[in-house]
Length: 325
Ligand SMILES: Cc1cc2nc3c(=O)[nH]c(=O)nc-3n(C[C@H](O)[C@H](O)[C@H](O)COP(=O)(O)O)c2cc1C
Image (cartoon, rainbow, N blue to C red; front, side):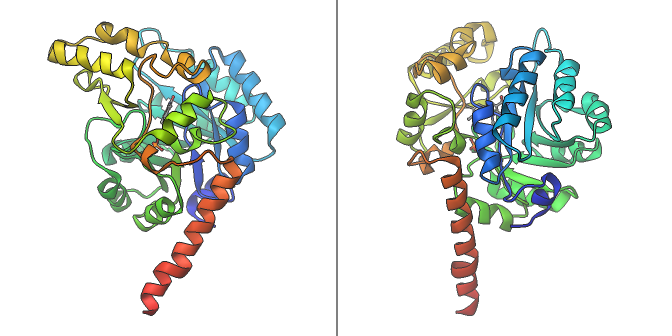
């Protein structure tokens, strides 16, 4: 398939694996890229720029296809050394960076000077337009359904994507709630040039996370996610579990007086406990509503082949058939 996104990134299919904390290691990124999509290593999961350089080198050993690195700009008391992370990315020969969280504006000169293509992930048309203005090559438009941080506007993709298409000149991919060939065809119809998936890629054979995590996603329905940290304006969509129940009880009790310290035990240091140790009730971890559409744990190649076959069939048979009828 050829879209502005496949052309921009030099990939076979317009399918991107979004950066995911403690999931986006070299094994997953390489498997997605080998299957014809764009795999992405999560930069900040690597505790230092040196470790990121090593992870990039490991990924190069596993694939000769393009892959990217995610850089998430979070509100933090002590910011990670982003210039050093970018240096590791440039020296590692990476051609694509997915930015997220805050605007990547301060880092655009360094990324652009190295000839890196930047795709910024954001949750509103205004942030997408800002990304276009500051020179991003593409955006990933993350709807309200998405796993992780959907922002505070609560606009689902059925509205957000065509709104983005009305305003943007640069290509964009649909993110949030994407799972299969139906998602891809819908995303293309709504004006996107491809799709970005998070949760769906966790439930794959190559995702280097504990089997309990994959099973939790397979078991979950579309009703099993919760929004947390709303009153802190740092909303996150997570899968429900005993840790999240505890967190939400504290949120109810504290109301608008809630401070991050009140829930720190349920949100800090949780990812290694869940993703590595398989402790499913340790606390809050991101998961999309799309869990309701995930019923198996295929390889990345099986998943992507299946998505493309279903997309072609939908376009060639179902949609064309309706025209001919
Ligand atoms: C477990 C998990 C961890 C994530 N971590 C990050 C992250 O560190 N940085 C980031 O930009 N996005 C992160 N995301 C968001 C994904 O990259 C992607 O935008 C989102 O999952 C898309 O929605 P979906 O899950 O419905 O496919 C994470 C998502 C999940 C499910």
